[in-house]
Amino acid sequence: MFCKNREFLLAKNKGFAKEYPNVAELLKNLKFPVSMINQIMEMLYKNSDLTTLEAGLKWIKDHPKIYKEWLAGVKTLDGKPALPAFENYLDSAEL
Image 1 (cartoon, rainbow, N blue to C red):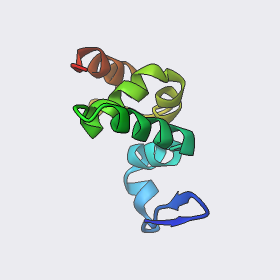
Image 2 (cartoon, rainbow, N blue to C red):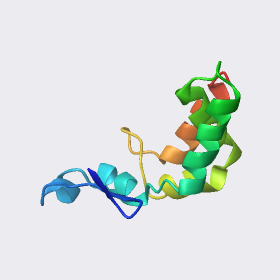
Image 3 (tube, rainbow, N blue to C red):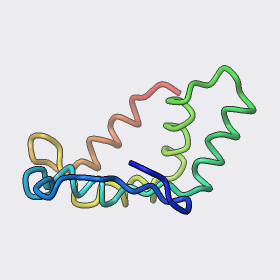
Image 4 (cartoon, rainbow, N blue to C red):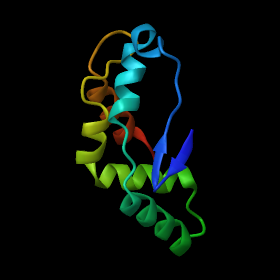
């Protein structure tokens, strides 16, 4: 993985998407806007008791459009849509 002009690119093998289509779909969907990173960093700066995980989950919880785009077309290990499973996780996460 490397960064070029604020865009991270992931090197992968040629057969990866065919061998792991679900993971490939998730990786294709993942986007981390600079504004997202800045807002999470600001949360951490303003609240030193907050962990990086807590700050990230709080931001994600407040921006469902982003995680819905990430999980579009992605399935859980048992083949069900990943979005409801992720939302259940978010609902149970203690923040």
